[in-house]
Each structure stands twice: as structure tokens, then as C-alpha cells.
Amino acid sequence: MRLQNVIHVLAERGALLQQPVNIDKIKIEGIESNSGKVAAGFLFVAIPGYKHDGHDFIEDAVKRGAAAVIGEREADAIAGLPENVPYVQVSNAREAIALAASRFYEKPDRKRTVIGITGTNGKTTTSFLLRDVLEQAGISCSLFGTIANFLNGEERKTVNTTPDALQLNRMMAESNDEVIILEVSSHAIEQYRVEGINFDMALFTNLSKEHLDYHGTMEEYFGVKRKLFDQLKIGGKAVVFTDTPWGRRLVTDLEEKDVPVITAGQVQDNEFWLNSIQADEEPVFTLQHLDQSYTISLPIPGLHNVYNAALAFAAASELISDGSRIASGLENFKGVPGRFEMLRHACGARFIIDYAHTTDAVQYCLHTAKRIGAKRIVHVFGFRGNRDTGKREMMVAASAKYSDIFILTFDDLNGIEPGEMEAELRALNEEHGQGKGVVITDRTMAIKHAYDIAQEGDWIFITGKGPETYRTPFFMPADSDRSTVELLLQDQNEKKTLKSS
Ligand SMILES: CC(=O)N[C@H]1[C@@H](OP(=O)(O)OP(=O)(O)OC[C@H]2O[C@@H](n3ccc(=O)[nH]c3=O)[C@H](O)[C@@H]2O)O[C@H](CO)[C@@H](O)[C@@H]1O[C@H](C)C(=O)N[C@@H](C)C(=O)N[C@H](CCC(=O)O)C(=O)O
Ligand SMILES: Nc1ncnc2c1ncn2[C@@H]1O[C@H](COP(=O)(O)OP(=O)(O)OP(=O)(O)O)[C@@H](O)[C@H]1O
Image (cartoon, rainbow, N blue to C red; front, side):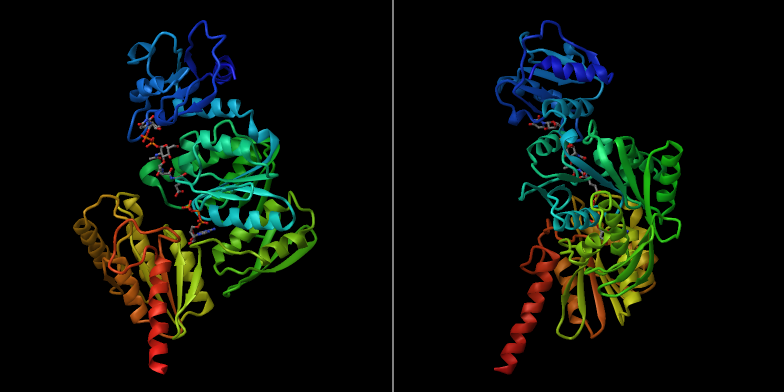
């Protein structure tokens, strides 16, 4: 592709500050923001990041064969740039790479049905629910999100919930699937990862206190999420779960701007009215739409998962006209790794591994167990070092409110000194624990303690890490919450076999 084509798009968007002359003949063979991956003929985009500044790697990119460079610094301030390599100055390099990638990969969003899902909690679960429903109806789906990137029947590892703009446009172009489902985090919107992509549907799950170390206030956080809904295609629709004040506010905002909105929620005026929810290990609920009513038994517990299912149903109904097919798709849902995953202790206790890392998520999980009739709730959890410290007090208070016993333990320390984190856990327990908490810093030993005290009818929640592997080494030879529980359960089975032989 000609460099001029990219420059044209940047100019159209007002993103161009200075453009070089005599570049008509320059062609680009690819785009990269990581100098180490630049090959001959590539356009290198220098991004000032959180850890590094891409401008410091321009020389490296040129040595590897970059044919042109985009950056934010003035051309005079760029070291190691030969005259024959044109330099384009832009106001924002992340925005520029997104626009350039979209142009280079020939606007892949135009060729597919693209569905974006945003919100504090429930993006992954809703995306899996929607994918399962669509695929059971014979509609092939790509899914890019926290667990992995799935396309053309393959699974690829991911570091982010939302891939960066380059990877995203590349994968969209590679995808042969009819629908692309994309989890859109607020970080991704803020960092222009989805810039230039237009959506057929944008879904909103909910908004609660999270990532305020990054976004500052709830108002700013909402403002960022809200931007996704300005990126609908002509005829595109917003699909909003309305049970939070932020969901209702979004609906009002969008309706004022004549954006078509589909609503789902527990109040009767929702287009998809969710009612008569029976909490159980397989919750049963009714969804009413127009003159149809569907009673659905969902194979995963959790009131929050009923909400996610209602939202997925509303979105799926835009692509599948027969509601009973959507209902049966939900009833055959296979679940999501690390989201309300249940393992059973021989004594009749349940272990639940869940990715809950917000106060809301913790409340929903523990409340679900209470509603189903847990005799006791035991909760094992901790906090990531260096992240969102403002939510810790509320999470401990929520655990103290709903659980009978809780065990505070280590999550990823992210460079925080173990002694510092332990002191923080002890202080939180002292202040907000209502005398129900203990601190056992080794995560595997904390889980073992829960296992040792387990009784028939207990629901033992281990939250925060879900399917992720441990980054901190712990005492037991296990690398995740699930493998720790499995090791304990295996030990129990072996002891039983020994006794009986
Ligand atoms: C803090 C943060 O958001 N970082 C994101 C950011 O990376 P960065 O700015 O830190 O990159 P950097 O290392 O400073 O490098 C700057 C530039 O120099 C370049 N470079 C660097 C070294 C070199 O030798 N040559 C070179 O060219 C790099 O390729 C890059 O272009 O831009 C990258 C590309 O988009 C992201 O992958 C990365 O996400 C990191 C891994 C991350 O953990 N982000 C979290 C906070 C995040 O985004 N989370 C949300 C989900 C949140 C949730 O809902 O739970 C997500 O969407 O994942
Ligand atoms: N609708 C919901 N409301 C509140 N909590 C929810 C909801 N859906 C899921 N959760 C809780 O949040 C946790 C994370 O769920 P999920 O992975 O689906 O959300 P997410 O938005 O993708 O989060 P992340 O981007 O951090 O992965 C779940 O394990 C559950 O505890």
C-alpha cells in the first residue's frame, strides 16, 4: 500500500501535524509499533508508552528496514533518521496506528458483523454466552477477549482483554467468521485500540467502582465507556442492561441522540423483561419479549449470570429471529473458565473458583450462595499489588457482610513487598473484618485452611484469579486456584482409598 493512503486517512481525521514531501512512490509492506518486529518496507509507529517511548527505538526500526516512521515528536527532535525515510508527525500516535491499521487491512469491520461488549463486569461471560448461542444456530464467530482470541476455529493467547489496534485489525482481516465479538475494556477505548472500528452492536453490561486509579472518577470512567456507543455503524444498535443507574443513564443519553437502543432488565418497560428469577445452581428465569415469553434454565449459577444471559439473548435476537433457538442455546451453555467453576468436596462442601475482583462481583457471588441456601460461606481472596487500592476496604466489608469466615491472602504482588501487603491485609481485616477474617499469606495454604475446616453445606469461594496462573510462588506444588483445590481433593481421595484397602 502507498504511504500516501495512510496519510490521507490521518489528514481526514485531523490527526496529522506535519507531513513530508515527495513521498508519492513510498510503499509500505506492513505496520509495526514494536521496533523488534519491523521488517523491510514497514511503517514504524513510535508510541510514547507507560514503560518505554517508541521514539527511542526509531533508529532500531530504521536499521531493520523501516520505510517510513510516524511519531509525535517534531521531526528535528528525532535521532538516527536518514533523509530517505520519511517522518510523519501526528498529534496522537496510538490514534494514528489505529487509523493506519484500519486502512492497511482495508476496513475489516465493514466486511463482518462486529459486536463490542463493554462494562465493568460480565464482558467475558456475556461474550461467551453470545458466541455459544450464535454458533449453535450455525453462525460462526470470532471472539477476542480476556481468555484468548478465537478465530477461524483456532485459539490464540492474548495479553490484553482488548487486543491493540494493530493486532485487532489484523485478526479481523484474517477472520473468516461471520460475526466478530470483541470485549472492549475502558483501557482499550482510552488507548485508541478500537479507534476507526464501527460496530453493528455495542453492548453495555454495568458499571461499578473499578480502575479508578486509571480513570480518576466514576464520571470519567463512564465517559470513556460511553464513547464506544459513538462508534456504531449506520443502523447499528446499542444493547443495554438497565439495572444499574449508569445503564439507565446511558439509555437516556442515547435516546436523546436518536441512537437505536434495545434494553434488557428487571423492570417491565424493558424490551427484554427479565422476571421470576429462581436462584439455584441452575437458575431458572423468564424473559419476556413482545408477546413471547421464554423460560430458561441456565447451567451456571449466579444472579449476575442471569443478567449476562438476558443481555446476550437481547443481542442474539438481532441475528436469530426464533427466540426459542436462543433460549435453547443458553440452556446448552458450556461456561467460562474460572467463572463460577464448581468442584465438590466429599463432605458435601462446594469450592467455587471465580474471577470476581470488584466489590460488585464479590457481592453477587456470595449473595448467590446465600440465596441458594449455603449453610456457611467461606471466602478466600486477596488484592493485586499496585492496583486500584481504593476498592479494598469495600471488598473486605462486602466479604465480612456475606461470608461466615473469610481468609485474606496474597494475589499477584506486582512488585509490592510481601511484608507491606501482609500489613495491609491485617489492617483491613482489623478495621472492616467484623471479627470474621484471618490472614494466611500463602494462597495455597489459605485454600488448604478452607479445605480443612470445610463442612457439609459450605460454599467456599476462592476469588480474584479465576483461571489465571500464579505469578508468586506458593508452598503447595500448584500453579492456580483450581489446581490447588484439585490437589487437595486428590489427596482426600487417595487417603480414602488407603483407608479402605
Ligand atoms: C499500562 C498499559 O495499559 N499498557 C499497555 C500499553 O503498553 P505500554 O504503553 O506500556 O508499552 P511500552 O512497553 O511502554 O512501549 C511503548 C512502545 O515502545 C515500543 N518499543 C518498546 C521496546 C522496544 O525495544 N522497542 C519498541 O519499539 C513498544 O512496542 C510500544 O509500542 O499498550 C500496549 C499495546 O496496546 C498494551 O498491551 C499494554 O497493556 C498492558 C500489557 C496491560 O497490562 N494493560 C492493562 C492495564 C489493560 O489494558 N487492561 C485492560 C483490561 C482491564 C480490565 O477490564 O480488567 C485490557 O484491555 O487488557
Ligand atoms: N453482570 C455482572 N454483574 C456483576 N458481576 C459480574 C457480572 N458478570 C460477571 N460478574 C463477576 O465478575 C467476574 C468477571 O466476569 P467476566 O470475566 O465475565 O467480566 P469481565 O467484564 O470480562 O471482567 P475482566 O475484563 O476483568 O475479565 C465474574 O467472575 C463474576 O464474579
